[in-house]
Amino acid sequence: MVISEENDSTQIKPTNAQGGGVIAGRRFGMEVRPNRRALSAINQNLVGAHPHPYPCVINKRGLSETNGNCDKNLPIQAHRPITRKYAAQMPILQQPCPEEVKKPKTSVNEFTVLEDTPLADIKYNGAVKEQPVPMSLEQTEIEISGNNQMEEVEMADIFEEAIMDIDSDDAKNPLAVVDYVEDLYAYYKKMESCSCVSPGYMAHQFDINERMRAILIDWLIEVHHKFELREETLFLTVNLIDRFLAKQTVVRKKLQLVGLVAMLLACKYEEVSVPVVDDLILISDKAYTRKEILEMETLMLNTLQFNMSVPTAYVYISRFLKAAQSDRKLEQLSFFLIELCLVEYEMLNYPPSFLAAAAIYTAQCTLFGGGSWSKTSKRHTTYSADQLLECSRRIVGFHQNSSTGKLTGVHRKYNISKFGYAAKSEPAHFLVQAPPQ
Image 1 (cartoon, helix red, strand yellow):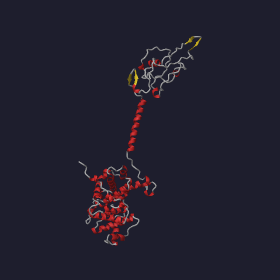
Image 2 (cartoon, one colour):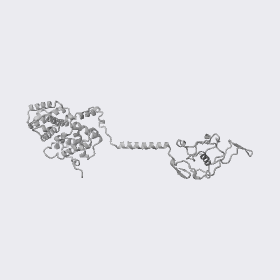
Image 3 (cartoon, one colour):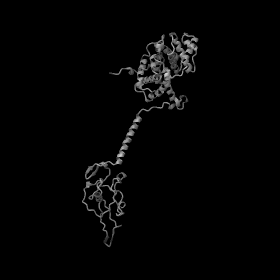
Image 4 (cartoon, helix red, strand yellow):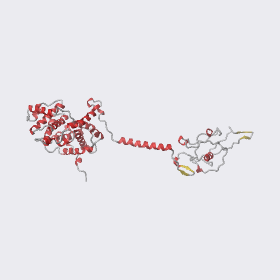
Protein backbone atom coordinates (compact mmCIF):
# COMPACT_ATOMS: atom_id res chain seq x y z
CA MET A 1 0.00 0.00 0.00
CA VAL A 2 1.32 3.48 -0.96
CA ILE A 3 0.36 6.59 0.90
CA SER A 4 0.61 10.07 -0.72
CA GLU A 5 -1.20 13.32 -0.74
CA GLU A 6 -2.72 12.81 -4.19
CA ASN A 7 -4.49 9.47 -3.63
CA ASP A 8 -5.09 9.49 0.11
CA SER A 9 -8.86 9.20 0.42
CA THR A 10 -8.93 9.12 4.20
CA GLN A 11 -9.46 12.52 5.77
CA ILE A 12 -9.42 13.69 9.36
CA LYS A 13 -12.75 15.35 10.05
CA PRO A 14 -12.86 18.79 11.71
CA THR A 15 -14.17 19.14 15.21
CA ASN A 16 -15.36 22.01 17.37
CA ALA A 17 -14.45 20.37 20.68
CA GLN A 18 -11.41 22.63 21.09
CA GLY A 19 -9.76 25.49 19.30
CA GLY A 20 -12.95 27.42 18.27
CA GLY A 21 -16.63 27.25 17.32
CA VAL A 22 -19.33 28.88 15.10
CA ILE A 23 -21.55 31.65 16.58
CA ALA A 24 -23.97 33.72 14.42
CA GLY A 25 -22.12 32.89 11.29
CA ARG A 26 -18.83 34.38 12.42
CA ARG A 27 -15.77 32.45 13.46
CA PHE A 28 -13.73 33.25 16.53
CA GLY A 29 -10.53 31.90 17.98
CA MET A 30 -8.37 29.64 15.83
CA GLU A 31 -9.76 28.88 12.43
CA VAL A 32 -10.38 25.19 11.78
CA ARG A 33 -9.46 24.10 8.27
CA PRO A 34 -11.92 21.83 6.46
CA ASN A 35 -9.21 19.23 5.76
CA ARG A 36 -6.15 18.61 7.92
CA ARG A 37 -2.82 17.64 6.50
CA ALA A 38 -2.36 14.27 4.89
CA LEU A 39 -0.47 11.58 6.79
CA SER A 40 2.35 11.64 4.25
CA ALA A 41 3.01 15.25 5.01
CA ILE A 42 3.32 14.47 8.70
CA ASN A 43 5.68 11.67 7.86
CA GLN A 44 7.68 13.93 5.60
CA ASN A 45 8.03 16.44 8.37
CA LEU A 46 9.10 13.78 10.85
CA VAL A 47 11.57 12.36 8.40
CA GLY A 48 13.07 15.75 7.85
CA ALA A 49 13.54 16.19 11.60
CA HIS A 50 14.71 12.63 12.32
CA PRO A 51 16.40 10.83 9.40
CA HIS A 52 15.80 7.12 9.59
CA PRO A 53 15.99 4.17 7.22
CA TYR A 54 12.27 3.54 7.73
CA PRO A 55 10.68 6.93 6.99
CA CYS A 56 7.19 5.67 6.32
CA VAL A 57 6.54 3.90 9.61
CA ILE A 58 4.78 5.77 12.38
CA ASN A 59 3.89 4.77 15.87
CA LYS A 60 0.52 3.15 16.31
CA ARG A 61 -0.22 5.25 19.35
CA GLY A 62 -2.31 8.38 18.89
CA LEU A 63 -0.72 11.78 18.84
CA SER A 64 -2.42 12.53 22.13
CA GLU A 65 -0.16 9.95 23.77
CA THR A 66 3.03 11.30 22.22
CA ASN A 67 2.40 15.02 22.46
CA GLY A 68 0.19 16.77 24.96
CA ASN A 69 -0.25 19.78 22.65
CA CYS A 70 -2.25 17.83 20.13
CA ASP A 71 -6.00 17.47 20.20
CA LYS A 72 -6.98 14.33 22.15
CA ASN A 73 -10.14 13.87 20.16
CA LEU A 74 -8.46 13.68 16.78
CA PRO A 75 -8.63 10.14 15.36
CA ILE A 76 -5.42 8.67 13.94
CA GLN A 77 -5.11 6.63 10.77
CA ALA A 78 -4.83 2.90 11.70
CA HIS A 79 -1.77 1.07 10.40
CA ARG A 80 -0.16 -2.34 10.71
CA PRO A 81 0.74 -3.12 14.37
CA ILE A 82 4.37 -2.52 15.21
CA THR A 83 6.07 -5.34 17.07
CA ARG A 84 8.61 -4.90 19.82
CA LYS A 85 11.36 -5.93 17.45
CA TYR A 86 10.67 -3.02 15.13
CA ALA A 87 9.71 -0.57 17.87
CA ALA A 88 13.31 -0.31 19.01
CA GLN A 89 14.24 1.10 15.62
CA MET A 90 11.44 3.69 15.33
CA PRO A 91 11.95 7.44 15.92
CA ILE A 92 9.99 8.73 18.89
CA LEU A 93 7.19 11.15 17.94
CA GLN A 94 7.77 14.02 20.28
CA GLN A 95 7.51 16.98 17.90
CA PRO A 96 4.60 19.36 18.44
CA CYS A 97 1.88 19.23 15.83
CA PRO A 98 2.32 22.32 13.64
CA GLU A 99 -0.68 23.89 12.05
CA GLU A 100 0.67 23.86 8.55
CA VAL A 101 3.71 22.48 6.86
CA LYS A 102 4.62 23.83 3.51
CA LYS A 103 6.79 21.27 1.76
CA PRO A 104 7.06 20.32 -1.87
CA LYS A 105 5.00 17.38 -2.88
CA THR A 106 6.86 14.14 -2.81
CA SER A 107 6.83 11.30 -5.25
CA VAL A 108 4.73 8.21 -4.75
CA ASN A 109 7.82 5.97 -4.78
CA GLU A 110 9.38 7.87 -1.93
CA PHE A 111 7.41 6.11 0.80
CA THR A 112 6.59 2.45 1.28
CA VAL A 113 4.65 0.81 4.06
CA LEU A 114 6.38 -2.06 5.92
CA GLU A 115 4.11 -5.00 5.62
CA ASP A 116 5.70 -8.18 4.28
CA THR A 117 8.92 -6.66 2.92
CA PRO A 118 12.12 -8.26 4.31
CA LEU A 119 14.23 -5.97 6.42
CA ALA A 120 17.22 -6.39 4.12
CA ASP A 121 15.27 -5.28 0.98
CA ILE A 122 13.35 -2.16 2.00
CA LYS A 123 12.70 0.29 -0.84
CA TYR A 124 14.03 3.74 -0.27
CA ASN A 125 13.66 6.42 -2.98
CA GLY A 126 12.74 3.78 -5.54
CA ALA A 127 15.84 1.64 -4.99
CA VAL A 128 16.58 -1.41 -2.90
CA LYS A 129 18.75 -0.52 0.05
CA GLU A 130 20.63 -3.19 1.91
CA GLN A 131 19.95 -3.00 5.62
CA PRO A 132 21.81 -4.77 8.39
CA VAL A 133 19.93 -7.67 9.94
CA PRO A 134 18.97 -6.87 13.53
CA MET A 135 20.90 -8.72 16.22
CA SER A 136 17.73 -10.36 17.49
CA LEU A 137 17.15 -11.92 14.06
CA GLU A 138 20.77 -13.09 13.85
CA GLN A 139 20.40 -14.86 17.18
CA THR A 140 17.14 -16.40 16.03
CA GLU A 141 18.82 -17.72 12.88
CA ILE A 142 21.65 -19.19 14.97
CA GLU A 143 19.15 -20.88 17.27
CA ILE A 144 17.20 -22.28 14.31
CA SER A 145 20.41 -23.56 12.74
CA GLY A 146 21.40 -25.20 16.02
CA ASN A 147 17.96 -26.77 16.37
CA ASN A 148 18.18 -28.17 12.84
CA GLN A 149 21.56 -29.72 13.63
CA MET A 150 20.16 -31.25 16.81
CA GLU A 151 17.25 -32.70 14.85
CA GLU A 152 19.67 -34.21 12.31
CA VAL A 153 21.70 -35.82 15.11
CA GLU A 154 18.53 -37.17 16.72
CA MET A 155 17.36 -38.62 13.41
CA ALA A 156 20.76 -40.26 12.93
CA ASP A 157 20.47 -41.79 16.38
CA ILE A 158 17.04 -43.18 15.51
CA PHE A 159 18.33 -45.04 12.46
CA GLU A 160 21.46 -46.22 14.26
CA GLU A 161 21.21 -49.80 15.45
CA ALA A 162 20.56 -50.01 19.17
CA ILE A 163 21.97 -52.59 21.59
CA MET A 164 19.12 -54.68 22.96
CA ASP A 165 18.58 -55.75 26.54
CA ILE A 166 18.57 -59.54 26.11
CA ASP A 167 17.65 -60.17 29.76
CA SER A 168 14.51 -58.04 29.94
CA ASP A 169 12.19 -60.97 29.21
CA ASP A 170 13.73 -63.03 32.03
CA ALA A 171 13.41 -60.38 34.73
CA LYS A 172 10.86 -62.48 36.63
CA ASN A 173 12.63 -65.80 36.11
CA PRO A 174 14.73 -66.58 39.21
CA LEU A 175 16.70 -69.25 37.32
CA ALA A 176 17.96 -66.65 34.84
CA VAL A 177 19.65 -64.67 37.66
CA VAL A 178 19.26 -61.45 35.68
CA ASP A 179 20.58 -59.32 38.53
CA TYR A 180 24.11 -60.71 38.28
CA VAL A 181 24.27 -62.62 35.00
CA GLU A 182 26.66 -60.01 33.58
CA ASP A 183 28.98 -60.52 36.53
CA LEU A 184 28.87 -64.27 35.98
CA TYR A 185 30.01 -64.00 32.39
CA ALA A 186 32.65 -61.45 33.29
CA TYR A 187 34.01 -64.02 35.72
CA TYR A 188 33.83 -66.74 33.06
CA LYS A 189 35.91 -64.60 30.72
CA LYS A 190 38.42 -63.98 33.47
CA MET A 191 38.74 -67.71 34.27
CA GLU A 192 38.60 -68.86 30.65
CA SER A 193 42.36 -69.24 30.40
CA CYS A 194 42.26 -71.81 33.20
CA SER A 195 39.96 -74.08 31.19
CA CYS A 196 42.02 -73.91 28.01
CA VAL A 197 44.84 -76.27 27.15
CA SER A 198 47.93 -75.73 25.10
CA PRO A 199 47.24 -76.50 21.42
CA GLY A 200 50.61 -78.23 21.23
CA TYR A 201 50.14 -80.68 24.09
CA MET A 202 49.94 -83.65 21.72
CA ALA A 203 53.64 -83.30 21.04
CA HIS A 204 54.30 -84.65 24.54
CA GLN A 205 52.31 -87.83 23.85
CA PHE A 206 54.50 -90.57 22.45
CA ASP A 207 51.83 -93.18 21.58
CA ILE A 208 48.78 -91.17 20.49
CA ASN A 209 48.23 -88.35 18.00
CA GLU A 210 45.65 -85.85 16.82
CA ARG A 211 43.92 -88.36 14.57
CA MET A 212 43.31 -90.78 17.45
CA ARG A 213 41.87 -87.98 19.54
CA ALA A 214 39.47 -87.09 16.69
CA ILE A 215 38.32 -90.74 16.40
CA LEU A 216 37.71 -90.92 20.17
CA ILE A 217 35.61 -87.72 20.30
CA ASP A 218 33.63 -88.62 17.19
CA TRP A 219 32.73 -91.93 18.86
CA LEU A 220 31.85 -90.23 22.18
CA ILE A 221 29.46 -87.88 20.34
CA GLU A 222 27.53 -90.93 19.15
CA VAL A 223 27.58 -92.43 22.67
CA HIS A 224 26.36 -89.14 24.09
CA HIS A 225 23.49 -89.09 21.60
CA LYS A 226 22.64 -92.74 22.29
CA PHE A 227 22.33 -92.11 26.04
CA GLU A 228 20.37 -88.89 25.38
CA LEU A 229 22.59 -86.85 27.66
CA ARG A 230 22.61 -83.08 28.08
CA GLU A 231 24.63 -80.84 25.79
CA GLU A 232 26.65 -79.53 28.73
CA THR A 233 27.87 -83.07 29.39
CA LEU A 234 29.43 -83.45 25.94
CA PHE A 235 31.38 -80.20 26.12
CA LEU A 236 32.64 -80.93 29.63
CA THR A 237 33.67 -84.45 28.54
CA VAL A 238 35.89 -83.10 25.75
CA ASN A 239 37.35 -80.49 28.11
CA LEU A 240 38.26 -83.14 30.69
CA ILE A 241 39.93 -85.30 28.04
CA ASP A 242 42.12 -82.49 26.73
CA ARG A 243 43.09 -81.20 30.15
CA PHE A 244 43.99 -84.71 31.32
CA LEU A 245 46.01 -85.57 28.21
CA ALA A 246 47.87 -82.27 28.51
CA LYS A 247 49.17 -83.39 31.93
CA GLN A 248 49.30 -87.18 31.69
CA THR A 249 50.83 -89.42 29.04
CA VAL A 250 48.58 -92.26 27.91
CA VAL A 251 49.22 -95.36 25.85
CA ARG A 252 47.07 -96.05 22.82
CA LYS A 253 45.08 -98.91 24.35
CA LYS A 254 44.03 -96.75 27.32
CA LEU A 255 42.80 -93.81 25.26
CA GLN A 256 39.24 -95.13 24.98
CA LEU A 257 39.22 -95.71 28.72
CA VAL A 258 40.13 -92.04 29.25
CA GLY A 259 37.15 -91.03 27.12
CA LEU A 260 34.70 -93.26 28.99
CA VAL A 261 35.84 -92.06 32.41
CA ALA A 262 35.71 -88.42 31.29
CA MET A 263 32.09 -88.93 30.22
CA LEU A 264 31.31 -90.64 33.54
CA LEU A 265 32.69 -87.68 35.50
CA ALA A 266 30.85 -85.17 33.30
CA CYS A 267 27.59 -87.07 33.85
CA LYS A 268 28.11 -86.99 37.61
CA TYR A 269 28.62 -83.24 37.40
CA GLU A 270 25.84 -82.30 34.94
CA GLU A 271 23.22 -85.07 34.76
CA VAL A 272 20.40 -86.05 37.07
CA SER A 273 20.39 -89.68 35.94
CA VAL A 274 23.97 -90.98 35.64
CA PRO A 275 24.95 -94.04 33.56
CA VAL A 276 26.27 -96.89 35.70
CA VAL A 277 29.71 -98.40 35.29
CA ASP A 278 28.28 -101.55 33.76
CA ASP A 279 26.83 -99.49 30.93
CA LEU A 280 30.28 -98.11 30.15
CA ILE A 281 31.73 -101.62 30.13
CA LEU A 282 29.02 -102.73 27.75
CA ILE A 283 29.48 -99.93 25.21
CA SER A 284 33.26 -100.54 25.22
CA ASP A 285 32.58 -104.14 24.25
CA LYS A 286 34.05 -105.25 27.59
CA ALA A 287 37.45 -103.92 26.70
CA TYR A 288 37.90 -102.67 30.28
CA THR A 289 36.98 -104.03 33.67
CA ARG A 290 35.16 -102.27 36.46
CA LYS A 291 38.39 -101.97 38.43
CA GLU A 292 40.18 -100.28 35.54
CA ILE A 293 37.38 -97.75 35.17
CA LEU A 294 37.41 -96.83 38.86
CA GLU A 295 41.21 -96.58 38.93
CA MET A 296 41.22 -94.28 35.92
CA GLU A 297 38.52 -92.16 37.56
CA THR A 298 40.71 -91.68 40.63
CA LEU A 299 43.74 -90.84 38.52
CA MET A 300 41.86 -88.29 36.42
CA LEU A 301 40.35 -86.48 39.41
CA ASN A 302 43.69 -86.23 41.15
CA THR A 303 45.43 -85.06 37.99
CA LEU A 304 42.81 -82.33 37.47
CA GLN A 305 42.77 -81.54 41.20
CA PHE A 306 38.98 -82.06 41.22
CA ASN A 307 38.52 -78.89 39.18
CA MET A 308 35.32 -79.61 37.28
CA SER A 309 33.79 -76.11 37.23
CA VAL A 310 35.19 -74.60 34.06
CA PRO A 311 33.51 -72.42 31.42
CA THR A 312 33.16 -74.54 28.30
CA ALA A 313 32.01 -73.46 24.86
CA TYR A 314 28.45 -74.46 25.80
CA VAL A 315 28.35 -71.83 28.55
CA TYR A 316 29.07 -69.15 25.98
CA ILE A 317 27.06 -70.43 23.04
CA SER A 318 23.85 -70.49 25.06
CA ARG A 319 24.38 -66.84 25.99
CA PHE A 320 25.50 -65.72 22.56
CA LEU A 321 22.52 -67.37 20.87
CA LYS A 322 20.30 -65.29 23.13
CA ALA A 323 22.13 -62.15 22.05
CA ALA A 324 21.70 -63.16 18.40
CA GLN A 325 17.92 -63.58 18.90
CA SER A 326 18.19 -67.03 17.42
CA ASP A 327 15.37 -69.26 16.35
CA ARG A 328 15.36 -73.04 16.49
CA LYS A 329 16.98 -73.40 13.09
CA LEU A 330 19.90 -71.13 13.87
CA GLU A 331 20.39 -72.82 17.24
CA GLN A 332 20.56 -76.32 15.77
CA LEU A 333 22.94 -75.26 13.00
CA SER A 334 25.20 -73.48 15.51
CA PHE A 335 25.45 -76.60 17.67
CA PHE A 336 26.13 -78.72 14.60
CA LEU A 337 29.04 -76.49 13.61
CA ILE A 338 30.54 -76.24 17.06
CA GLU A 339 30.42 -80.02 17.55
CA LEU A 340 32.34 -80.34 14.32
CA CYS A 341 34.94 -78.10 15.97
CA LEU A 342 35.14 -80.38 19.03
CA VAL A 343 36.47 -83.17 16.84
CA GLU A 344 39.24 -81.06 15.32
CA TYR A 345 42.43 -80.75 17.35
CA GLU A 346 43.47 -77.53 15.60
CA MET A 347 40.49 -75.67 17.06
CA LEU A 348 42.19 -75.75 20.46
CA ASN A 349 43.96 -72.62 19.24
CA TYR A 350 40.79 -70.66 20.02
CA PRO A 351 39.32 -70.05 23.48
CA PRO A 352 35.81 -71.43 24.12
CA SER A 353 34.12 -68.01 23.93
CA PHE A 354 35.72 -67.25 20.58
CA LEU A 355 34.76 -70.67 19.22
CA ALA A 356 31.14 -70.22 20.29
CA ALA A 357 30.92 -66.78 18.69
CA ALA A 358 32.51 -68.04 15.46
CA ALA A 359 30.06 -70.97 15.25
CA ILE A 360 27.07 -68.63 15.57
CA TYR A 361 28.52 -66.17 13.07
CA THR A 362 29.12 -69.00 10.59
CA ALA A 363 25.59 -70.29 11.12
CA GLN A 364 24.19 -66.83 10.43
CA CYS A 365 26.23 -66.54 7.27
CA THR A 366 25.02 -70.00 6.22
CA LEU A 367 21.36 -69.14 6.69
CA PHE A 368 21.18 -65.41 5.95
CA GLY A 369 24.38 -64.48 4.16
CA GLY A 370 27.01 -62.01 5.33
CA GLY A 371 26.56 -58.84 7.36
CA SER A 372 24.24 -60.29 10.00
CA TRP A 373 26.51 -59.80 13.05
CA SER A 374 24.61 -57.27 15.14
CA LYS A 375 25.91 -54.74 17.64
CA THR A 376 24.16 -56.68 20.38
CA SER A 377 26.11 -59.82 19.47
CA LYS A 378 29.34 -57.84 19.28
CA ARG A 379 28.72 -56.32 22.68
CA HIS A 380 28.03 -59.63 24.46
CA THR A 381 30.67 -61.69 22.66
CA THR A 382 33.27 -58.87 22.62
CA TYR A 383 34.25 -60.04 19.11
CA SER A 384 33.64 -58.32 15.80
CA ALA A 385 32.83 -60.03 12.52
CA ASP A 386 36.32 -59.28 11.19
CA GLN A 387 37.89 -61.03 14.17
CA LEU A 388 35.73 -64.11 13.65
CA LEU A 389 36.26 -64.36 9.90
CA GLU A 390 39.36 -66.56 9.86
CA CYS A 391 37.93 -69.05 12.35
CA SER A 392 34.63 -69.01 10.50
CA ARG A 393 36.36 -70.02 7.27
CA ARG A 394 37.81 -73.07 8.99
CA ILE A 395 34.38 -74.02 10.28
CA VAL A 396 32.95 -73.77 6.76
CA GLY A 397 35.67 -76.17 5.63
CA PHE A 398 34.62 -78.66 8.33
CA HIS A 399 31.02 -78.28 7.21
CA GLN A 400 31.92 -79.03 3.60
CA ASN A 401 33.71 -82.26 4.57
CA SER A 402 31.37 -83.39 7.36
CA SER A 403 29.69 -86.08 5.27
CA THR A 404 32.89 -87.51 3.82
CA GLY A 405 35.62 -89.67 5.32
CA LYS A 406 35.36 -91.90 8.36
CA LEU A 407 34.52 -89.28 11.02
CA THR A 408 30.88 -88.64 10.21
CA GLY A 409 29.34 -89.05 13.66
CA VAL A 410 28.33 -85.39 13.96
CA HIS A 411 26.85 -85.36 10.46
CA ARG A 412 24.75 -88.45 11.16
CA LYS A 413 23.55 -87.02 14.48
CA TYR A 414 22.31 -83.78 12.92
CA ASN A 415 20.91 -85.41 9.80
CA ILE A 416 17.62 -86.42 11.50
CA SER A 417 14.35 -84.62 12.10
CA LYS A 418 15.07 -84.17 15.83
CA PHE A 419 17.77 -81.65 14.93
CA GLY A 420 15.95 -80.18 11.96
CA TYR A 421 18.26 -81.80 9.39
CA ALA A 422 20.83 -79.14 10.20
CA ALA A 423 23.57 -81.22 8.54
CA LYS A 424 21.82 -80.82 5.18
CA SER A 425 22.25 -77.04 5.18
CA GLU A 426 24.31 -75.71 2.31
CA PRO A 427 27.69 -74.47 3.61
CA ALA A 428 28.57 -70.78 3.35
CA HIS A 429 30.90 -71.23 0.38
CA PHE A 430 31.28 -67.49 -0.16
CA LEU A 431 33.33 -67.21 3.03
CA VAL A 432 36.07 -69.48 1.72
CA GLN A 433 36.01 -68.35 -1.88
CA ALA A 434 38.91 -66.14 -2.89
CA PRO A 435 37.91 -62.53 -3.71
CA PRO A 436 38.09 -61.57 -7.40
CA GLN A 437 41.39 -60.07 -8.47
